[in-house]
Image (cartoon, rainbow, N blue to C red; front, side, top):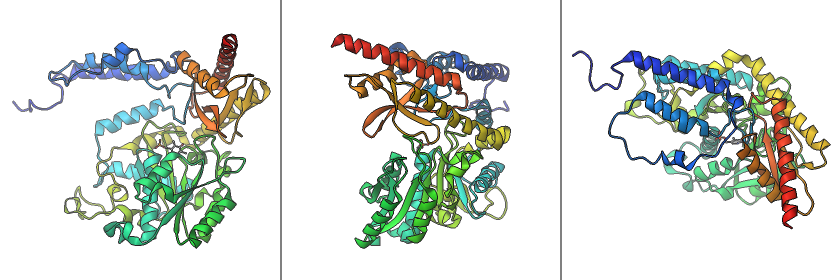
Length: 486
Ligand SMILES: *Cc1c(COP(=O)(O)O)cnc(C)c1O
């Protein structure tokens, strides 16, 4: 016997290939026909119950497990690939990204380090991102799971920069400094989580009020920094947002850059979904000042439609980034030749050692579609938001709750003598359960809003109209049935 009978490779490659082809067809069929499906549907108890089995000791047939996936998993996803999905801020994925994921999985590369082309692919994407954001060639970048972790990495780099490298040994409590960070009240919750995880404490994040357009109030920001300095604190970081999660507001990035410069603070941008609007010539000017940031966190898996997960952190001062994470260890020694060659590895720029090949799906997506097409797609989602806004403004039963900056529209249905928070929440429940469309909810000025975040590249005008028509219909039904109860 030449082959190892313990290997997990199949004995019969022919039938594995046939099943693999069926799987590929199933998923391409799924994406091609996504429009015919409900956006989302309730998971039947019986299906959920299938996932409480005990650990399987015996082998199962691949075809059988594949069938279970088709029947019990695939129909009950969240639906973010569907053109009617407008909930939260989630990308729709592409068939190209899916195929790239398959190639990456086949290669099974570990991108922690070493001399391999997959790392050159990641470096290529970093080079593209430097170009897009006009960062210098000394800037560093790294794929991570998402912007939550990218923000965290940025806070750690800024923290180490202000406290010095010794803080990595002695910790931050011995520094004698009370670090203070700044973000707007509209900042994503993961910013305060990052401050928390960095050991600085959530109370050290000053949430600056916003103006009528939901962008951070620059006068309040500077006043707060000066007050903190006067009180003996150590301001160290401003986190601006390019596209807030609730309403898509963009902070005045240029002025934040000026303030950060004046007070020698780290200027970070949470651009989770908005930063990649730089791909669109039309939208990019609204992000003016982004090129002056010290670090930018964003997600390829949102507006760029790359498959989950694909977050990214770009840091202007690559050395500071390296100094924050690099940890000399003998088994990770760099050699002059062979597999272990190379000076700086991805594992020197973040907490992950083993890392998947996330860069490949981004590399494929950017190449296959090109920046022009991706930019037009992004601009189109903003045009759809304008269309939706127009319809809301023209409809007396509806009320727009926030100005439409980019691609997020917050509105609500109005009816006399009703609890509008309950009514609008119920409209969203009905929309989800009908499978027609999936907006989400948020609070704007304390009022519950139906929130349509138009991120998916498949969404068209008819999907917007269908969502709004259905929202009006459910609003009419729910408010009249409430009337009859009274
Ligand atoms: C989505 C989002 C995040 C979180 O990003 P993840 O990729 O989910 O970790 C942070 N900030 C903003 C503004 C977002 O839209």
